[in-house]
Structures are given as structure tokens and as C-alpha cells.
Length: 221
Image (cartoon, rainbow, N blue to C red):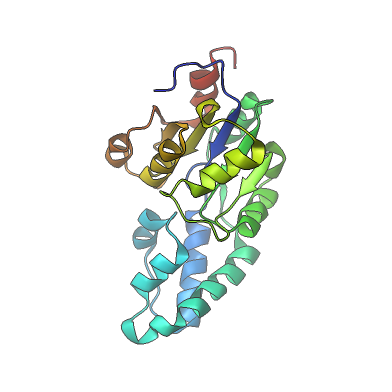
């Protein structure tokens, strides 16, 4: 359990489902890619629980056996469509902007399964980029729950894991943060289920991100 609230030198956030409600735009891009390679589209209810997984894992599930050879084409189609349409319906969750403002001047970062290019694009489109010292995607980095992307952030910003928090909406985020040695916070409004989040063992669970600053750096935040 992270107990020294004075010693917070970095807060790392997941992006989709934590800072940004991006479900509709991700679903639209996935379905555009599936249609481009001649496959059936999927209901958003099928897509939402899998947001945060690697694209190849999702498409392998949804491409029929005789279309598996089109995996790289589907991923490329998704990335093209999503880059151009990532902010049609997406928006920061309530409390996000307030949280980020109140956490200043603590350095903030993003660790996401997205590629860095896509994550930066989303942040730019939604006027979030100015808050972050680093946006780190999984470019040739193992995906969460592997801690590699969290460790990459810590190393690039030269912060000790014991002075950092990882904040996310899925058990994978919590597991990655814990494995990297960070304190962890799970948010309940995103794509993860509360029971699964609690089972992952986060140090803190919040229903509204505006509660985070007061919880980790005190009531003066």
C-alpha cells in the first residue's frame, strides 16, 4: 500500500477508458477495418470489454479462419481510419480536466496500448496533450499487463517506481503498475468491471477522477 502521500513525483495514466471515453470511435474504426477486409461488423457491446487489448488479439478473434491472413491488412485499415476519426465522439470523462489541473505541477504521463502516434493524436484533438510530460505507447513494447510500458515511462522521466502512481480502468493497468513497483489506482467508470478491478488489488479505487488529487497528495490538492 502506498502510504507516503508527500512523495508523489509522477502520475501515469492509461488513456482509453481512464482519461477519454473513446468507445464509439474505437468501435467505428474496428468495424470500418472489418468491413474493409470483408468481415462482419461487431456490436459495441462485444468491443467495449476488449478495449485495451492489442489489436492483433482482437482481430484474430473476429477474423474467420479463412481470413486470418488479412490480419495485418485489418490492423493497417484500423489505424488509418482511427487516426482520421479519433475525436468524432470521444471526450474526456467528467472530472478529468479538473484532476489534471489540480495535479500540476507534478509531472504527468500516459502509458497506453495505443501506438504513441495514435495516442498523441487523441491528446492533441481533445486538448489534453499540454498536461503531459510524456505520452508513451506500445511501439515494439509488450502490452499490459506486462509492466514494460510503465517502466519505459519511469526510465524516460527518471522517476523511482516508489514515487509514482499508475491509474487505469482495467485489471491489466493495475497489474502492470503493480509489477512495475508503482502504487495503483483503478477507476470504475471505464471499460473494466468493479469486481475484477478490486480483485486486481489496486491501492485505491475511485468513481470520479476528480477525487484522485486529494487522495494521493492530500486535501490541499
